[in-house]
Image 1 (spheres, rainbow, N blue to C red):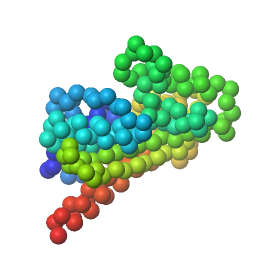
Image 2: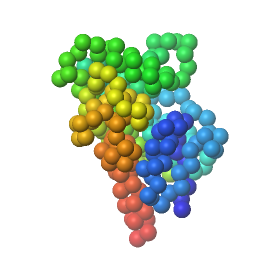
Image 3: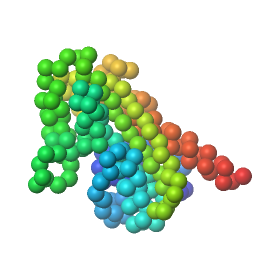
Length: 210
């Protein structure tokens, strides 16, 4: 079973990705178990940040690495919070380092959309997954998944994480936080990106065995 380091310090994200990867022939090791520190996300796109994180984890551990960069884009806010989703509530606080808590981010999003009509609250989750065989991999595998929905006017459900209590899922007519883990994996941005990644890794393995 091939070992792959998962370049994320977000415990809930690690849990979700590990569950999604459980059916594949890989042993996923969170970077925290290998004493890999978080690296500053200095990119201006999801792709850049995912590559930065994957390269750092691969360099420190010597293992192949998978990194995720994801967030929510709200059309009324011209795509914000986007790559700043995890630190949305502290974005304008120069003294704060690191991510904000989920509740603070959700509260700010509701404040920004106060009074905005339902038809104008369209949004989507975006996920980029990057796989690098080593730190100097010149051709990393890059996969994208998106999940369309809209922002609710109040929180619903207690599952999931991040903006899930505010993200209306049209497929099931409920908030993402009201979905089971299995339901979410089948339709989410991260589930879509991961299935695409597994297909590409499988094709790569097959080609190299020829």
